[in-house]
Length: 361
Image (cartoon, rainbow, N blue to C red; front, top):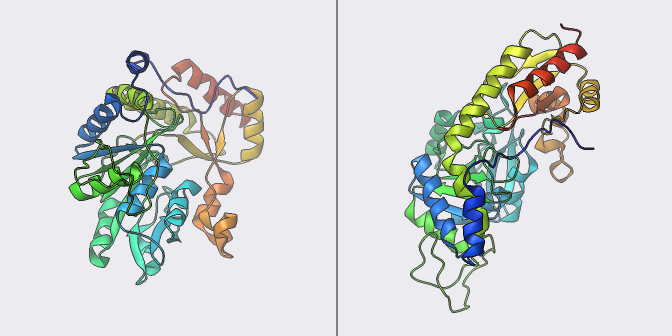
């Protein structure tokens, strides 16, 4: 069904059309076009990082990051229980094994539980900045230092949270804070890792001059398995325009968070979640959650459920999944319409319908 108030909607009010029109008019629609490099540089500069490597999705970005770090069969990667399954799949894609760690009350990975899951096979930690909440990176980086581990940040939902680990991976899917429709980007300060990411992204051609964002003509000899994970110039055109508006979009989203906090703070049956460092989705816990969702849907208001724990997923099923804190949150959590095109009147209506459901004037 269509919703008058969708849970997400891209905000394309900048120079997106201008840049895409330019890309099409000039014939540069493939990954070789100039907007790819421009976006990579702009996004890296915004985050204060040396290198941006654009690719085809956030999942591709994570896969590239793990491969670039040399993680493969026989290795283990620490992954949060509370996340979207696409965080875990890249570990499988490279032949390694995800090892799951439960969450804190803010839904981010609990650093106090990480050390117990580290084995001689552990090679990396993958913190996920869930719904825009930055993980406790000081604690995670300290653990990584003591155990000589690499850190790959899943920042798919956290544009505006500055990278801390070896590689940070962002999604540009249509529901993210900024978007290219599809796409992703890796950020790193490491020159060698940047070269490797760009090399793997473009089918790993033989070339001794490959630099990030500059895929050379090659000899069609390939010394290792690579990927066709390139971003097109048209996607990069949209991503560049979105990056130019990132501060504006984050400001609007911050106002949306404040408005929801104020309107829902005294509603019995609604438990507000901890603040977010950047707002991707406004998440709450709700009594009679499924009844509330049905009621809101009838009012044209879209909602989405919380992620289910990784140990509940059929591919990773573990008998202890029901005892996890991540499971408890998944049973009563949902998030509300959250996007930069949401007006104050829209929010007033959504808040009013929730208050009415719980009998609050």
